[in-house]
Amino acid sequence: MASRTVDVTLVSARDLRDVNLVSKMEVYAIVYIAGDPISRERVLADRTGGRNPTWNATVRVTVPASGSGSGALRVLLRTERPLGDRDVGEVILPLTEILAGAGDEPTGATQGAYKVRKVGSSKVHGVLNLSYKLGGVIHPPAGQYQQVGATGYLAAAAAPYASAPPPEQLSYPYPCPPPTMVRPLRISSR
Image 1 (cartoon, one colour):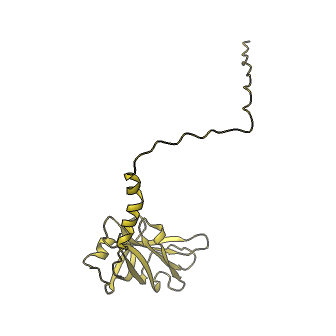
Image 2 (cartoon, helix red, strand yellow):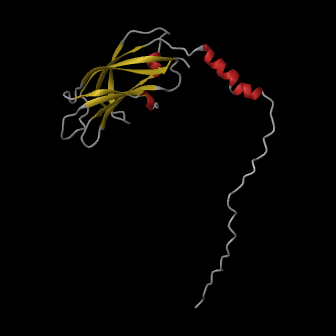
Image 3 (cartoon, one colour):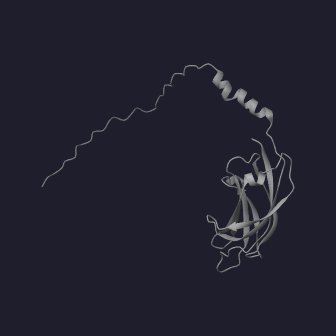
């Protein structure tokens, strides 16, 4: 399957929902393909920005070149807290939207401001400024599929069926224990 890279530059966010009641928010971002936990890339937290963090950090994610299916690029914003990190919001970009009109060659940067929504909700809590650029399409080697097909499943399917080998005779070093007698249960009626 052909693939390509997407370089996502997280610039900044503003007017995020304040989820820390006691301390100042230290917001970081996780960028990944929805449903693919292996593709997760994290951007370090901005320690001073609070509700208006600035990162200017770039992460690289590999996506299918066709953009087929219902895949999406997800940017999850979280804040570090002493008692466990907490979600601030998310931005979801459909891959069909990112890859629309792109040929096989690398593209220039596309900038945008996207609404940050509360995770699992449609409520808007701020704006995320980011840019992305696509790398060229990478095709797998052509011989890779032919080599696997010729020696793998197809070759085994073409071979005539043979009878199964006889089962091995198992020998146990100890004889089976003799059966035990169980006394019937007496029920008394009083």
